[in-house]
Amino acid sequence: MNTIDYRLSELWNITLKGVLESSQIRQEDFDSYFTDTYLASLEDTTALVVVPSFATYVLITQIKQLIEFSLEMQIGRHVDVTFIQEKNYIAKFKLDNNADSSFLQTEPVAEQTFDNFVVGRSNSQAHVAATTCARSLGMIYNPLFIYGNTGLGKTHLLNAIGNQVKALDPSKKIGYISSENFVEGVYQSVKNKKIDEFKQQFHDLDLLLVDDIQFIAGKNKTHEIFFSIFNDLISNRKQVCITADKSPNDIDGLEERIISRFNQGLNVNIESPEYETSLSIIKMKIANNISFSQDIDDEVLTYIATNCSQNVRTIEGALKRLLFYYINFSDDNRITLKVAVEALKDQVANYDSDDYSITKIKKTVSNYYGITPQQLISKNRTRNITNARHIAMYLCRKMLDASYKEIGKEFGKRDHSTVMNACVKVEKNIKTNPLYQKVVEDIETKVKINPQ
Image (tube, rainbow, N blue to C red; front, side, top):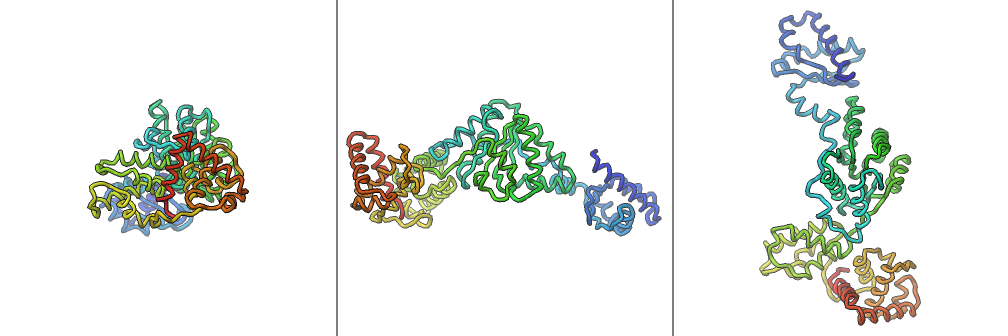
């Protein structure tokens, strides 16, 4: 029994003594019904009393005012006393209020592993960092902070780290918690004066996984307790891995000392999947879904990867919608591009193979290479961006018959000679490099089926 429970027990014993001395209840009734009752919690205006049976509940509620009066005489203020049967208390209150209840999960989601995480340019840095942490707990990237928009695989990576650690060493203690559950755990522990018990759950962990840390922003007490737990683990070389929708510096309401600690580790970003990654995700989802027993044209995969690849969830939603439409409304014996366009018409813009524009080409090329349109027209001369820029200029010339001057204006106000040289280089590479030719053809196909 901890100090708080001991004090509640002592207070309840004195309260019951006052009830008995009032002579409003017989000694035999007292011995029969009140012996196993106890005061479970006491707050400023309320108290909760647990009773062993329904019979006791009926009897004790009849003298509620007497109990409240006796308790008031001990604490110097009036409180409203509520009674609950013990079986209901255990099922509802005790599990919710106990600091070591279900707030901290000790088992990662078994289905989310590194083996079924599709790696591409958009998430390769996060994947490498995560696998490194799993192999070298607390030694290299600590803490590891993974950030990006929803549905990009951040939670998957957290669980994959946990599963890998568990596979390498089953004796390692792993804890996973969402920041919403952490906030609720702090609230319950403060409410029930069990902060030490709540913090103790984390003390012996070898790996702590915290999902969506942005939800603790602006909550001072939560910051205080999280900072204490975090420092304890880091100082003992225990691994901490965290996800959020933004980088630490961009989360409003996060204390500077916490931001500073996060920045001492490694921060890596996950971006929306580029074309190749989206296509791999789609193929994996189809292969793992026994419902997709019919043939699917490659054009369909291209269409979904190009138009429905903001994140993994939109891809999953598009596939479900496609399958639903095909089974219930299509007479075709396979899933064709026509079926896909009709099935997904409410999720993407209308398909029009003749609707081309420089903006459309820039967007398609950017998506293909996993860069932004701003990078495409920037002064950046890294090989990947330069190659993408040249292909985009070439396609603008080929598909739109735009002038070199017009294209140059749309690509960072470059002069016509720069655009001309880019087009010449692309044409030369197409003739001499079959792989390069295939890339250009793939991008051109995507432009044709990509909505404006």
